[in-house]
Image 1 (cartoon, rainbow, N blue to C red):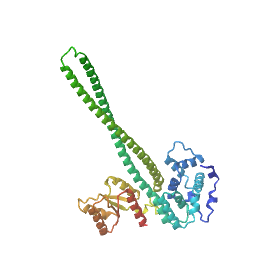
Image 2 (tube, helix red, strand yellow):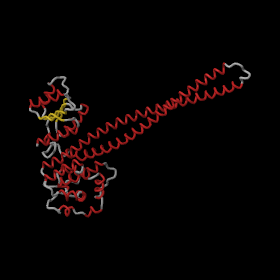
Image 3 (spheres, rainbow, N blue to C red):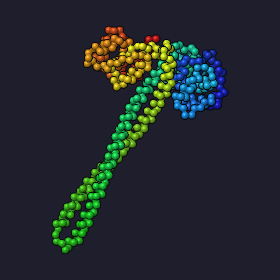
Length: 403
């Protein structure tokens, strides 16, 4: 951490404008974890702890984050150090945006969120005193749902990585087989070549003895065998050439697949780190108590039965995890209408919200869902696709609309 940070007085910096900003230990509790997680890297966590006399060797990233979070409830040597550091780090953002009206600031937040430049605005939103609760809830919800969107990308990347890895293993086995066949052909070629040399040697011996031996039958037989051996050698050479070319092509393909595999591994690692950080930063926000409070983003979905009709059956467990993490009670129907409408009708009647992705559903199922929701006056969301991010957006919109 630069030595200049130790000389910065955040009170002098924050008092440059009439709007009084919060100190880091004064912001809302549900913002403390995501603010530290998104605005401080793990290395910055470690440097701050080391500067304040803590031992940081051989401790994991989440343990470092948890150690810093333990000082965020009041003013102390660690929280003061973090407050000074963040004030200096985002001094330009604070100077530019802190005097904006709440509506204008919220518009800047939306633009920064779309462009991926949101950490400084997220910090400033947390320390401002004048933002309405509705804006603060939307800012927190945008950041939380980013975790779910990146989780979907990680799963896609891991599936692609698994397919590429299987293909590379299969290609490696095929390459080993071709190498074995090539060795066998070379051995056969060597044996045939040796036989040809022996036949040529015998032919020379017979030619020398022609002046005394008038029988030409052995000579004709040897010539015939010589022609056959030459034909066989030619065939073996052609096969050897084909095998060599095929092996070269397979080696090129294997190199290409290995390059793709390394690229996918790099992408997968990066996405896994990103999702791991987001989960580590955002998940503790929902673990501060057993009772859901009104300021919690999932408060409006608590005890609500969420019915998902259709979608991708193989990731039903992920739908369930997503709904339950939002505070809802999960119910599911695969969208097949083999048993008529009795089964789906009873589920719709019990549900508080029905989510129906149309891209993984039959036309009959979609029509039946709309009809039953009108009949029982149930809220329904017809989604264009069945991805986890679409389900997450629907749940977030429902939570916001219930406010």
